[in-house]
Image (cartoon, one colour):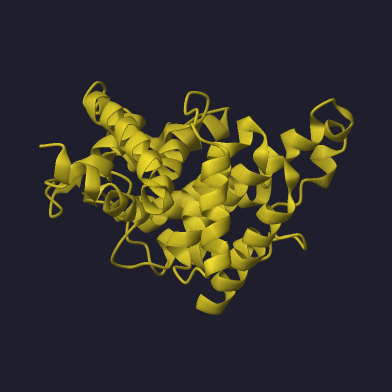
Length: 286
């Protein structure tokens, strides 16, 4: 599996470098986020790759974080803290300080939990959080139901950074959700479902084993992820069709690498690793 993941990251890196759309302003955060994930999964960066990352950061400075998801912004900011120049790191620390100030504004929301996981180094890692699933017996909108259940687990487990106490009978329900989303070819929900199973410590889950195989078969010959040719047939003819496709492919790749990292690291999950990049900020904030 380690060799397979290394090959995946190499192919993804080649895909990014060969695509001119990476320089468009609405793609920058996603590209930085994906590069951060690549550097986390495969830490052996050669001089040429490091130079490419540094040049990309420099050519797109300052970074506009306003129109992207919080998770992608945190990843992008973390990459700048790792590879930026002194001035770029100072700007990244300023953005971190803004996030730190608002982290308790809505602590029970997904974004609030995410921010607290990233910035609070004094969290009780031995905390056990009770989890009472609320799965409706009848729900016509299956996707909405799956989204709600996954969100409950992400919040209660703090994205896998704390243990949850729950009735194991629900494992089969989550496995069913994961398999269902794979059949629907909803890659984002499928990746979330696999990560949630991992948060629940379902290491021997058949869905996880199936999901890993599923992920490995989703990489295209160009290095991107997802067979969306049918869905993209109409989008291609639109004015910004190619860029829209690239954005979807970027987000899919981010979700895939996040999931691969979680499923192949027993000790440190991704949120913990992002915290390590922000430790410079945590050391100076006091």
